[in-house]
Image 1 (cartoon, one colour):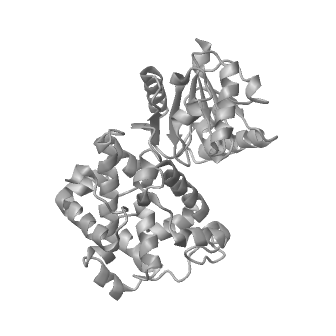
Image 2 (image 1 turned 120 degrees about the horizontal axis):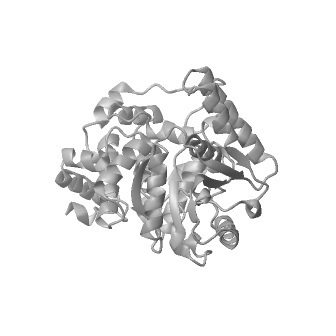
Image 3 (image 1 turned 90 degrees about the vertical axis):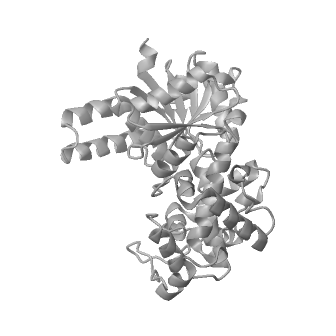
Length: 386
């Protein structure tokens, strides 16, 4: 079964190159393809350079570095691929692009080849519609940078066969990753549950409850590595908005996920965050944010005060609500939701575990208070809290 040793990765951007590196490190022959001339070759060179850097630091031997790099092979195009066990696509986040790609792959690969999408938010079933045997289409959502991040969401479409999902989960575990299972729900686990972490801070900022630095300090004080506003600047306001908008559209514009006018205006104004030098914060030439000092007196008043203006209570209530609702709908297990949020976002603890400590009845009360203050459905409590 020579094909079992062969993996194809389509799309040689930072994510595709990272996945290729992970697979090659695990001993697979990796066939790397990109639609743009020279991109796959440049990605292979980048992989070789990173491996050489690891060898220089003593993390791997020079022989291991060279042998791993040699296992990455650049193919001219999708139609030139040999028979492989699995194809992982990491192309642009566009449904039609992915559907066209999978249709071409289905025409050239045997019926045993698994087709995995690295999409972060698109519907696996919609992608699988392009393949005559959609049971072999699954989601394998890696997190960036793939060689470092341990989490992979193994995503099941309604027609994905259990055997292929098990194959995908076992494969990424053999690559040293932690696999969590979820249904093909908008945003999967991480990108759906995390929406309120960004949205609540943006709403509080827009309402003038506190300045950005104070709101970020409040969440860091609760154990988060970065505050939500500085984190969206790091991610890129445009990237964060695109994911949020995708979830909103796929949930029939559920008010829980409605993009904020604040973030939409930031993107329209080109204030994309660190990469543009100005987002929520302005950035110095060295990348450090300016005007980043919180108001300690205001912070002391807000945290522990009314839920409507407490950044921590308000954000945690919404995170817990999203997490328990996902489990209530049968789209993931409680254990996988908590594990995904810790590994995928670096949260200090899983939101369901956090909810147990706070008290689910307390969370339900906080949401009822928010729903009364801001009617419209965003703050409706999950049935799991009743």
